[in-house]
Length: 242
Image (tube, one colour):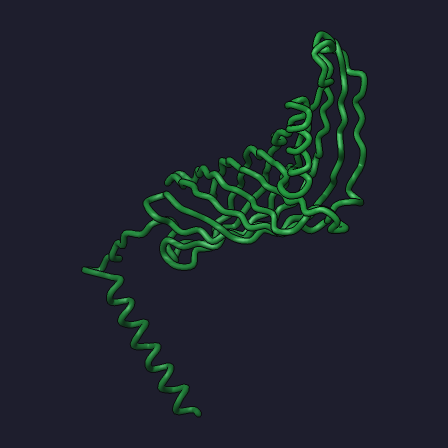
């Protein structure tokens, strides 16, 4: 057994010596062309923020679409505009490939808007807006592959924790709000949401970066599983790696 360890040590010595000789030429380190962060780069930290365009998909939204069709457009469904903000850690693995776990506060949900479906009441300018305001903590773990100097694609799993979920109802007519109430609805929703996320981006030499991505929810947000409704989020981000 001692002889085996001795042979391994000698072999490792030759490998290290040969690698050192290849890395230096005429007393200076040899430069190599790589994309993204080289494997020898240290672990780096960053911050990011951006816009969310969130929506639901599944049985609930199919029912909404059916309602839109029946009311001739008096009811409409829209994406909820929100934001995300947080930080990440960039871990170089090999040249052109990084692992990037993150921690983000992210707003999701959906918006429904309606009005009285009768032309004789159009002068009242009646409107009803129901907004699902879901607030999550996202924990993505991204694999980033550089396909050019600065350009990269990324994808990976994402675990999300539901911090709060509220339903906001607004109604009005003639420019006046008759109803503006908010209800806590967290108890009926699943606290843990699994998703896959992916997209593309560009990292500047200065450390600034931009990206666009998409979150695709894998499990129903309904706690009891009685309806199949899933989170869908389009993201646009700006960030800085220190």
